[in-house]
Image 1 (tube, one colour):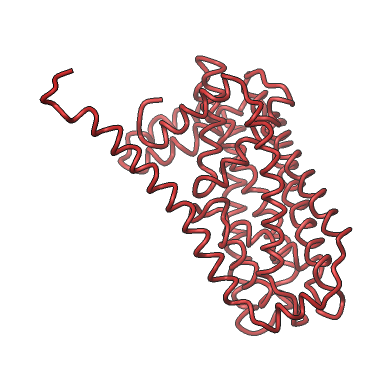
Image 2: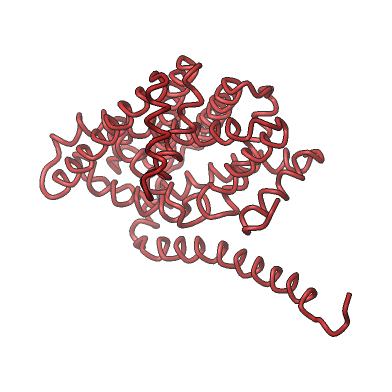
Length: 358
C-alpha cells in the first residue's frame, strides 16, 4: 500500500461511523415515539389501570395465541417456498422465520428480515434467485391480503352503525379497503391463472418508462406461482388465519387489562381496530412499527366502539408490543445456535442494505 495515500484506511472508519449513526437513529426513533405516547396517557388512565385487577391467565393466553399465529405464518412461507421448487424443511422455516422476526426489531420496518430470508434461499439454491425473492415478496403480499380481507368485512358490518365524523371516516376506510381488495383479487387471479398472453403483455409493458418497472416488480413474483395456484390460494387462507389470531391476541390483552366496568371494545370491534393498526405499523417508520401501532390503536379505540370505552388503546397496544418482543426472543435462541450458512446470509443481507456487494 502506498503510504502517501490515506484514503483506504478512511473508508472503513467512515463506514463504521455511518453504521453507528444509523444504529443510534434506529434506537432513538422508537424511544422518542413511545415516550411521547406514554406522556399522552393521562394520570386518570394510569390510576384506573393500577386499580383494575389484572387477569394474568388471559394475558398468557394472548401470548399463546400470538405464538400460534407466528407459527402459522412460518408454515405459510414454507409452503410458498416449496411451491417454487426450493427444498426447505419446516424446522428450517421456523428457524429462518424466527431470526427474520428478530431482525424486524433491529431495522425500520421489516425489510431487513425479508432480505435475509431471500438471500439465504438464493445462496442455498443457486439458479433460483428469482424464485427465492418471489417466495418472500408473495408471503408479504399474502399477509397484506389477509389484513385487507378482514378489515373489509369487519368495516362493512360495523361502519354503517357508527355515527358522526368517526363513522364517516370508517366508511371511507371501508371503501378504500374494499377497492384495494377487489383490485388485488382481480390482478392476482389474472397473473396467476393467466397463460402466455399475460407473459407477453408483461414483457411489452417493460418498455414503458417508470410504469414498466413497477409492473415487473409486481407481476414477476406472482407469475412464478402460475403452476401452483392451489398452493397460493392456501397461503391466502392461512393469512386470514394468522391475522385473525392476532386480533384474538390483542382482544385477550384488552380483557386481561380491563374488566367489564371499563366497557372495552367488543370482539367484533377488535376485528376493525387491530387490522387497521397493523396496517399502519407496517409502514417503515420505526423498528417493528413500534409507536405507530400504539397511536393507530389509540385512535381506533376512540372511533370504533359503539359504546365509549375507558380502556386505553395505547396501553393495550404497548402490552401487545411486549407480547411481540417475547415472540422475537425466540429468534435470539435460533440466532445463537445458527450455523455458518445462516451467519453468512446475515452478513450478506447487512452488506446489501448498506448498498455494498454481498
